[in-house]
Amino acid sequence: MMSRNILITGAAGYIGGFIVANLLSKHPETTKQQVFAAVRTDEQAKALSTLGINVLKLDLSDEQAVVNEMSSHKISVIVHAANSINPELALPLINALAKQKESAGKPTHFIHTSGLSAFYANSGWPRTVNKDTDAVFETEKGFADSYPIRKVSQPV
Image 1 (cartoon, rainbow, N blue to C red):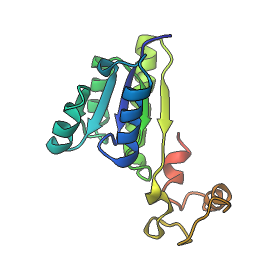
Image 2: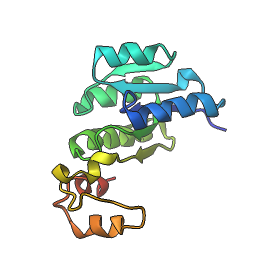
Image 3: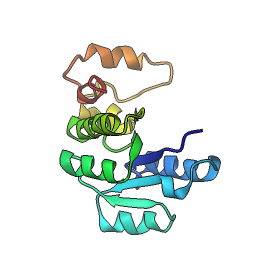
């Protein structure tokens, strides 16, 4: 199996934190040296550094900074678990991966997650109650570009 360096955004949050913990506990083929956590604050960096993983204090909206970090750490996989409704955070990551693929000549992968904020009334979701039997995907498609998460989902 090919060794890959993995960047996890939102690693200090619920979903991102679970992904980090799962990688470390259930995937022995992935070493701590291959796991990179993107954080916003010093407090987040301090908390995650106790896990022995690489922590990058990174402004995800700064495309050049993202490109530089991806290149210097040879990151080929991104799990984007940070803010799923802001395209200004996803697009620099996607563009940085494209540049990494071009320069390294190796496949890259982008995994985009969503959180509960995508289904919150203040983010444009029309309902307050959701069930696993609801037509969530059909409802989201019906919004076209007005629903914030669609602005991220479409380019991804």
